[in-house]
Amino acid sequence: MAGVDLQVISVPSVAGVSMAGVDFQLQGSSGTCWPPESGPAATSRWTCPRARSGSPVPVCNKVDQDNSPLDFEYIAHPDFPAYRVRWPVKRYQACRCGTACGAAGRLSAAACKCACVLKNGGGPAYNADGTLVRGRPMVYECGALCGCPAASCLNRVTQRGMEHRLEVFRSKETEWGVRTLDLIQPGAFVCEYSGDVLTVDDGQSTDWGNYVDPRKFPARWMEWGDASAALPDKEEGQHKFPELTTGPGYVLDVSRRRNLAVYISHSSAPNVFAQFVIRGNEDESYPHLMVFAMDTIPPMRELSVDYGIDRQDYPCFCPPEHELTDLYLHDDITGHPVRSAAGFFHRADIYSAVAESAISPYCPNSTIFSCLHTMESCSLCCL
Ligand SMILES: C[S@@+](CC[C@H](N)C(=O)[O-])C[C@H]1O[C@@H](n2cnc3c(N)ncnc32)[C@H](O)[C@@H]1O
Image (cartoon, rainbow, N blue to C red; front, side, top):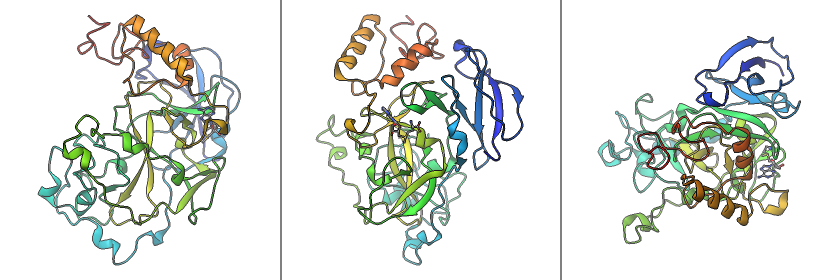
């Protein structure tokens, strides 16, 4: 608990979900925990300080007295071992551009001949706005030893840190979960998994209790940005990514130090996916385990990732097929678009949709969970 600041925050009423009106009413002394108050207008939140400068991550419990996330030291980024920089071979794989490296649709990879961008194969990893163009076995960003200016390099998206405000919240179904307070666009970088790095051998198994094992995440990155089904004759569908020479050789021990990512729930129809990222000359057996959005995620929606587990592993709250159908029928009746046909709701979303039924900050004629359009773009409920 050392170093934890308690902040009692007035939570805006449901209409203020944009969070613009968050008002710090009182800051408690370090190490103190206050029980949550009931009611929508005033709720206690504990804040874990982030290791780097930046906003603290709020921890919100409106359900019970548990405050266990505060028992863990917050570590925003894993410390990979120093020997991950292999001299001299890996060093020459870093980029030697003198200028900003390319992003799709802007300064092309060919124009700057960036070694890191070229390693991605099939074009730059990111658009100029930082969106991941498509999932890959590995995304190669520029890194510390690269010659390009870090401030303007477009190939360092995850190094700029979390852009969206996320909240660890107490869920009635899965104990603790993570939800976003901001709209997250598909392909956006969300957060990094962090904990203490333990080097492991191939085949050494771990469970989810105390370890996050990067090897266990299924390759859901394949689903992101692959237009081959729609464009079977195009280059897109024929693209082959460079083979990885090695898989991840580590797990994250989260028994003592962790960050918010460990609280992301499992779903077989997730809205975020795990993507390995290497920076410059880093050792490929220690890729960063990054989380990107694979869907539009509205404010107050819970994040869910595919753990790569069987449903039998624990009582799972993913919706059975008939609930999926019911939900779509309901939305067909209201006429509001919900999500792409490929996705469906996590059951926890349904509960929080009820609990948090709020007016959408985007489409004022609708609720957050039924329409993501702006008044200008919505052709249904904002007519
Ligand atoms: C990595 S932890 C996630 C954080 C956890 N919810 C907590 O409160 O610490 C994984 C555990 O969360 C719970 N969990 C995650 N997703 C779930 C789901 N869809 N249904 C049921 N339990 C889930 C299970 O207990 C699982 O063992």
